View 1 (cartoon, rainbow, N blue to C red):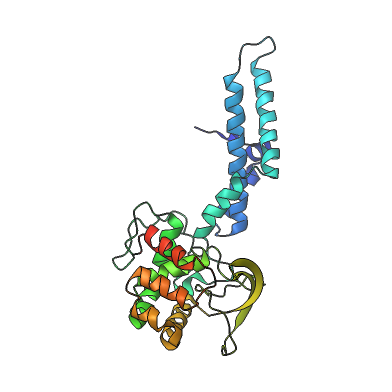
View 2: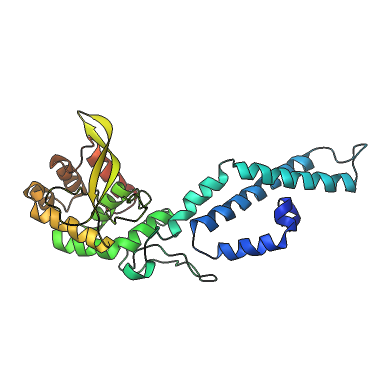
Length: 292
């Protein structure tokens, strides 16, 4: 059992700091998550130092309960100092846990698709709804959350195109990094563009300019491009379905969309993406995540 004395000095002795951290931890914000992760990193570092001390001799000439107390206090301060600079653990925790937070600028209740932080004391769902995708039991949490949140929109697009909803979820995952690399405006506002659809001359809606990777003669290049921006993820799926149905380039995609290989290779042949390995990547995402 870890006691408060095992934490860094300021954390262990400052009761007000503990209460503030507990209060912030209940708030679904990245700043609160970062602070909590840093304190966890300090605790972990302190546990490592304590284990190293205990592995050494404890009955030396200058060893006593007093020296051990002061050594523990020194280790607490050292842990806090090291954690303030960071050793990488807090960053990993923030990246892993940020997927449970709503994207900046979204209203988690308005569209029903933003990942909301559960209320204090509430239990996380243990089973997928009946209409949710049948993902492997060991699928990462961010994969499950992404697929379940967007499944109703994918089903609507599937009904319009005849392409299985799982394939559409897989393509959205490939284009957006399972929602963790979504296209955002300069102010951080979401574009809800999960399919990387560019804003061409005929686009009448909002757009955002971002730096992206394009392949020219097989070589990757960083360029600035304008992408479509929507009001919701539902709008993004509807627009993608409309694009596939209206553009003659994607007639083959619609015709062969019931097979993941036909869908992925049809998109690449139609020039949907410039990445020469786009079809292989899409098939890999869909099959590895159990969406096919």
